[in-house]
Each structure stands twice: as C-alpha cells, then as structure tokens.
Picture (cartoon, protein in one colour):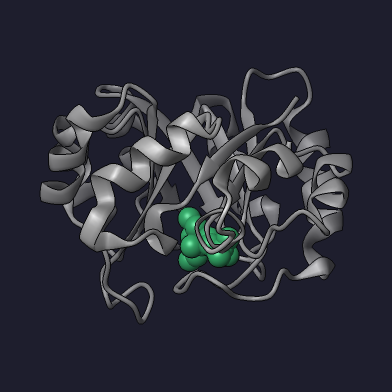
Length: 209
Ligand code: DX5
Ligand code: ZN
C-alpha cells in the first residue's frame, strides 16, 4: 500500500492546525510541506517559523519539500523546526554537500523537475532516503498532472533497485491518475488539491490509497 502525504499548500491557512488534524484523522500518513522562496520558483509560501508552530499539532512525519535557491542555508532551521525529511532539488547545486548536512539532522530527499533527467541524481543515490519525481513544474498547487513523466517514474524505480529509498511523486495526482503513478512504481503519493479541495478528506485519501 502506498503512503499518502497531503500537501498543506492547498489547506485553509487560517485554520492550519485543524486542517492537519483533520487529514490525520482521515488517514494521512505524512504531512507534505511545500517551501517556496520566490527565486527558485515564482511563489512564496512557508518558512521554518510555521513548521515550528504546527509541529506540536501532530506526530505524523513532516516531509519538507524545499523549492528554494540556496537550500544549504536553511537545513538547520527546518530540521530544528521539526522536519523529519528535508528534500532539496537536484537543480540547486551543492547537492552532495547539502545532502550530507541534512543527514546529520534528519532524513534526506532529492527532487527532480519534470525536465531534469535522473542522471542528475546518480552521484547521490547512495546517500539519499527519498527520490521525488515531480509531475508538474514546481511552484503552485492545483496544476495538471504531466503524463509524459510516467516513464521517468518507472526509470526511477529501476534506478533505486534494492536500495531502501522511498519513491515519491508530487504534482497533480488525483484518484483518476493515481493508479498509473502506483503502477509506475511510486510508494509515496503527494496530493494537495485532491485532498484539501475534496470536501471529504477521508474518502479522498482512501481513493488515493
Ligand atoms: C508543487 C508542489 C506540490 C503541490 C501538490 O510545486 O510541490 O506539492 O502543491 O499539489 P497538487 O496535488 O494540487 O498538485
Ligand atoms: Zn511538494
């Protein structure tokens, strides 16, 4: 069975704590936290102060996806705020050094944009805990799933082989396309709008699983 990680980017931020408790009750496995800085992506979202303030609300794993230009500067701040996973982007530079810094604090992931080939992560595959394949261009929730990335998910599964690495897929996943994502080899499904805009979190999470 796959793990489902609702992205709080699509939650009601005026009631963030309650929203997290509601998806926990509805069967969420992890909480996916999308951090954007207005440089690496055009949008600005959440910083360590918010992560710290929601940390006491749940014991679920905090899966922090950094879409920021110089992630090495913020690893300690997010780890100390309560991140269990910190995922950085392969397109950022200084990847190996940043992964090492993350691993001193918590678990480490690496993400690839839809246009970035998996060869970009080959050098670090033996030091990561999670590989995140993006199925939208990072920056906003509610975008359309890019079907053309499905072969890359399959390729990622092959590349992981017998290593103990989660294969996470993020972007535009909903109950209609999730079967293809699982079939391609994903074991952690991120879903923002498919959960938080659904009106019934429990049914949404069940149908993704
Ligand atoms: C995109 C983010 C995703 C996104 C997921 O930049 O990394 O986590 O918010 O939201 P949906 O499921 O609505 O695409
Ligand atoms: Zn994300």
